[in-house]
Image (cartoon, rainbow over all chains, first blue to last red; front, side):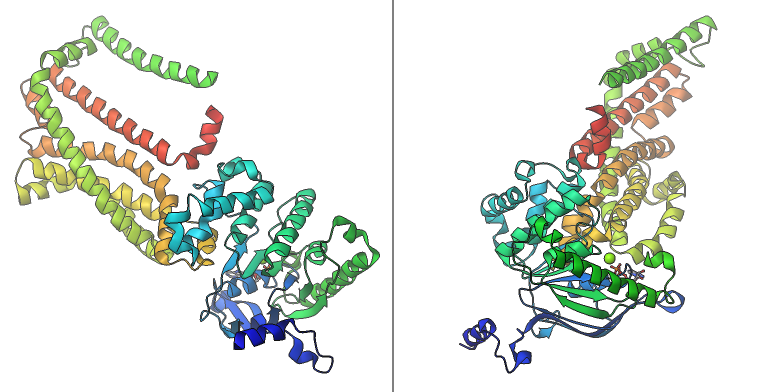
Amino acid sequence: MTEALQRTALHAPPPATAPEASVARPLIRIEDVSLTYGRGERKVQALSRTSLDVPNGDFVALVGPSGCGKSTILKIVAQLLSPSEGHVFVAGREIGAVDIRIGMAFQNPTLLPWLSIRDNVMLPLKISQPFRSDWRRKKNGEYRDRADALLAKVGLGGFAGHYPWQLSGGMQQRASLCRALVHEPTLLLLDEPFGALDQFTREELWDVLQALWMEQKPTVLLVTHDLRESAYLANRIVVMSARPGRIIVDETVDYQRPRSIETTFRSDFVELNHRLRSLIFEARAAGSGAIPAGVAA
Amino acid sequence: MKRWYKERFASTALIVGFFLVWELACVAFGISEIVLPRPSQIIVTLFDRWPALVPHTVQTLYTTLVGFALGVGIGVVIGMIIGSSRVAYDVAFPLLVGLSSIPKVAVVPIFVLWFGAGTVPAVLTAMVISIFPVVVNVATGLATTEPELEDVLRTLRASRTDILVNVGLPRAMPYFFASLKVAVTLAFVGSVIAETVAGNRGIGNMMLIASANFNVPLTFAGLFILAAMGIGLYLVFAAIEKRVTGWANRKAELAMG
Ligand SMILES: Nc1ncnc2c1ncn2[C@@H]1O[C@H](COP(=O)(O)OP(=O)(O)O)[C@@H](O)[C@H]1O
Ligand SMILES: [Mg+2]
């Protein structure tokens, strides 16, 4: 009953008087999170009192100079790291208390070399609940079909039985996207997933990702250092300062979907990129006292 | 493909050539069979004495394989414990290297003291000697697993067991099989030495008695049997390794195909 009420509230048009209350309850709330790597002499403060809300169903891109703590944020949200200070809430409760399904893709495809592409993609179904309970029964039927269908969507239809080393980097990255999405995660974490690819492959994969997102509508947190990528894919671009990273700009991007490469030639798209670029430049300049130029480059 | 055949042909020719030179040198320099028998003599002896040699061969094979199996079992367990965390690995590795550099055959007299002469010391020596390569390799395979691969599993809320079964063990397989090839060869060394020092059966014991009787061709026949068994077991494990862990050798395979 309460849930039904809440749901209507989420979808209700925002009342003009109270914009604060209209913001959907964030799926992820990062509150004053700090994180320090190592101790003593080799201490590195990666995050210092960073806060960020990601509403349910949103597509947020996180950009910033390299080494500013973007990956660290993703790792905290994925519970691969725990913050030294501060709190992270998922669906309103302290992280760890709620189990949400997470899909994650990294800059490297990180496919398991001893498994076929299909078996790699099916891995989340083997490990995470509720799929895990039916693994034995469905691995040669439903799950297999699901993996194959997803692979076909990203253009890897004929490669399910191949091994990772038989595929090019771009193909491996497609497979890794499939693995991140096969269990229909509530939250999709992408850490520079296209960073190592050439421009054409990258732009192709933007469309693949956009199509998959429009279909499944997971909440996405995408880390990238490519401004065009962030503007092309995200609903919101969050810019971080140099280390220790803090959020300095939060920009909404409301181009209609599906976006296409044509979108990237529009004057407002180009203008947005220019603006973000100069903001990041300023952020780097501001941080240059703290970090050697080589690290920031 | 062509190159592969050429290499095969060359190594076969080298082996045949080795025995030919041996044979001819013995004839040319008139070397007495008490010093170095000709390969043809050794093979004739091998066939003549075969019925008497079989029980010794079986005995050596038996002690080797039992000791090897025990050693591998124990080695895998210890290797998994040490490889389970980077810290355990870093802490235990120096001790491991230290222990494995002790000549393991030095334990034979101790085993004889405890268990008397016979089969038991041979089995135990083979076991002790084959534990270390397995421990070192399994631990290394587990401990050097890329953290990124573990992260993939951890984002899926995988338990430690899940990670071990799905990432750690498959990843350690090539290391494990590589160690089996080494361990089985070493196990032979162990059991033969134990048989020589304190056996009443087995090829090692047979060779000792034959040499005491100045039956040099028979001594060398024992050596041939050992070589054949060693090569045979090595090939068996190399073949298993290739089947099970082909993914780790993909480059070599590609080059051959
Ligand atoms: N495991 C680690 N140990 C020590 N320092 C680390 C570790 N991981 C990251 N750092 C440091 O923390 C800072 C933030 O790292 P990261 O979150 O990976 O940055 P990025 O924004 O490039 O993804 C960097 O300066 C990096 O050197
Ligand atoms: Mg990073």
